[in-house]
Length: 535
Image (cartoon, rainbow, N blue to C red; front, side, top):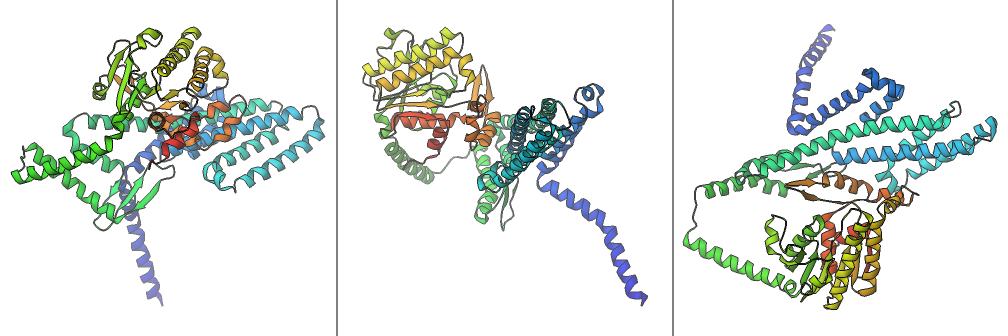
């Protein structure tokens, strides 16, 4: 009778002895398969340590008090595997807290003179209505997909503040302290995520700095995107999606499996001074002639159009020039010196004219033979200076273009930002005056783009500043939150950023496509047009 039990106990004991080793091997394998998991774990631990200082350091605790626990909770629930997901959850939490605090303050203000009994009844009804409405909203597919977490935070914060306000006198102080601590937690989460992105950007630049770094580049790419490439299949974890997507592709696996060997062979041949045989040279010559003929046929329509980009030395204008050159257009630009101020190689393909938009007499020969114009001219300074640059200069260009028979004119304006328009009165007055002049002079072929914050790689002195580190996640988070732009006063602050590549693509298309409708395009129209595929 005892023998079976002894055998079972022995088996269980053997399994128990092997369990720690198996667990350690499993944990090691998880980290080895994707090192980013271990990095993320360290990142979360460091973030929790930083936010714990609000409790551990006496000066910080005296300023924040017991509300510091909200910062700790924010780090725990907001910090995600990717920067995009972290930013999305942080925005959801911040917006939910702001809306809940504002609504709680409105209820407090409304019920202030109703007495204790009336106030209790009103708060009870408000909690029921808001709770039921918010819960029902969570069932909507669009809200469920994008704002479910924000609705939950809104519901939680609203009930905590509203119900507790019945016993506490200063509800605004509660809402303010809670928002500050949540903002601290979100700030720590974003700092950790964006610091990781900055290190990746620096590593990529170091790898690309030398042509001898191709093997390193391949290694970085394979590690960065976590390619696991067995012969029988492929499992690729893409970090770009907010939630992460697991893609399985056997054909892609086979291609990627051979990629390192092809690159290694090619690099070895190049470094050894490989020279093709006569037969191979004839084959390459024939192939290149076919490709050249095909590309000539593709670029032939573009040769008939001459595009003038005003402001071609600037951030947006330089991308306009590059986009137009990529489409095979003949591109010219204007500068006071008559030459490019950028050291990039593409600038040598631009025909540079000398002139000043504030001096109409210097523009006589600039528009000769030009079929379309894109103006990216703008600047900041005093109100008078801003009106001259954003208004008078562009209106002189419109007048000169009309006199020379230019067919289409595209103007890069700016979105309305509410109160900011008042602070930058000269800037926006100049922009809007130019828009009126353009629609008056080119009613059928004038196009106005009104982007908000434009992100991309911007040259500042001798360095490149990548604005997309901040702009791209914000664009992804706000592109479906158009309803937030309707909020009084602060609504315009929720206008999503847009990439400079999208603006350039739409502007060049508007300048060269006679079927492109005239009128004003806001940031949502720009993004929609940039995603359209040309037939």
